[in-house]
Image 1 (cartoon, rainbow, N blue to C red):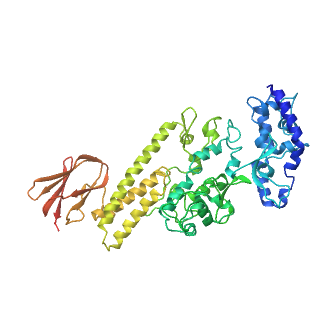
Image 2 (cartoon, rainbow, N blue to C red):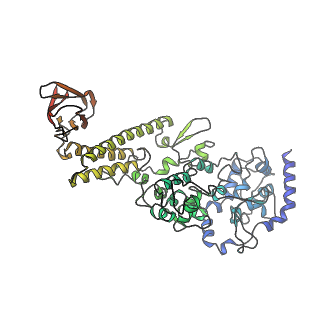
Image 3 (tube, one colour):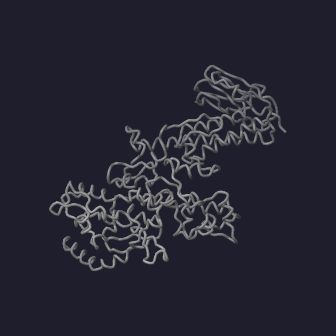
Length: 567
């Protein structure tokens, strides 16, 4: 069909139904009763949309008529998302007519000089764009709906995120380049949260009531804060509503329910819907928005201890590089904040990195052609995204190895101090455990503050080694080649052998009996870095007696006597 004929027929149909529009859409002054929301809205970009459209028309659409914008092959329908109720102005219009009425033309075409017209009548994204207000309001309450300017009718919406996704996603226009909702749905903020909570309730909180869980850990506050908006629930009631219980308590059979209405971490958890640009946190306990001083403070509410001091989700704290016991404060990437890496957006139009607007929270974004876009390259301009990914993977492997070593050492130290009353050693072990737990609570695998998490784990290893070897850290001189006394000594089954080397070298460690007979080789020309290292000697079926440990590097040898006493 000829696009001009299509425009004519479309206009004819809408003119016929237009008289109903004045009755279908509320003309009440919302600010009279909702002054706070109205004040917020006036400060938001939703209240300033006409100039954005004018600039786009003067640029991308210069040389084209209004119907091309609305009905053409590459149409974008600016009215639908930037000012849907504009069709109600001037006694009712079609979208094409609204484009002519609100934006200047030259010989029927948009040009580089196109600008906004009739600005007093332009509605922006008004209250009635997202709320279908009944004629008898406040007797009847508004419903969450999107005003559909092509049909001049309201479409009912399931939840607030679905509402945002009409214009900030592909729910209405599949070819739009505004795809924040699409990205959100791919992220952990947008899916999987209800299952995660259900697993925790069925495990850690089996036997607890919803009220007890809400008081102790408050899963709702971070996993779905806006769940309390559903029928104005309390946090405990939200837990009871969205997760099954048995006789009023959670059990091993607890699973999600009412999954359609579970909001996950919705758009409005971090954005006050009436002023979305202002960084805000929805507090499910007070049902109020709290304005954040920065995006970092917002992330720290749930990914740090800003809201709940006893949480074990401490990415924010690790990023700050402080809080370890006996470990100096340190920041690997000074000045870099959460959103710099997790919400970076490319300036290249048409890329997923650009269209997602950072709402996948991924450091590495896969483009349509299979290539990778990385936020790392914003600062490291000479680095490719693939090289950045390799570096991140290497950091994760290094963290994993250190974490494994730290937990193994702490396990040995724990068994040594099982019946100990040595308060100094017990305190040292507690500090080691704390630093490991702190490093692990970052949950990034050592990426967020790599040098600091390494320092935390290494400190835990060193403290555990001091307990295992019985050697205080103040007695170790890393500039001396030394074989330390084994611990415990005497020993009945196994003992730990510690040694310090002043520089990297190949090390051999062997065990001999009193007759000088070789018993076992513990290390054979193993390359070790400078520092103190510990290995374990298991006496297996050896008889009680005196044994010797030999440490050799190059032409240097150290000998240490050990006593094996079978019980």
